[in-house]
Amino acid sequence: METPYDWLTIIVFAGLIVLFLQRSQGAPRDHLWQYLVAAVGCAVTNYLGNEAIKNSDWIYHAGAIALGVSTLAFIWFVLQPFSNDHS
Image (cartoon, rainbow, N blue to C red; front, side):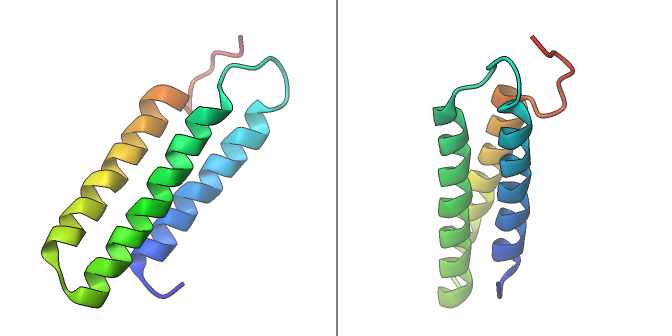
């Protein structure tokens, strides 16, 4: 837990865990693979970000930021964490 990428991806991953645990109670509305996609997105974002800091490479920073935003968009649009639909 040394870089901002570590902290940000752990925060997103923790939120993903809470969402999964909350949604595992009741009728299924998500698939497990959707959480796997988001978790892998967090892991790869963290890896790219840490490599960017280690090597001072702006291309890795750009990739990490793009993948991080894409992962958040995936969570927002596919998993819909703030949806009130309980069906």
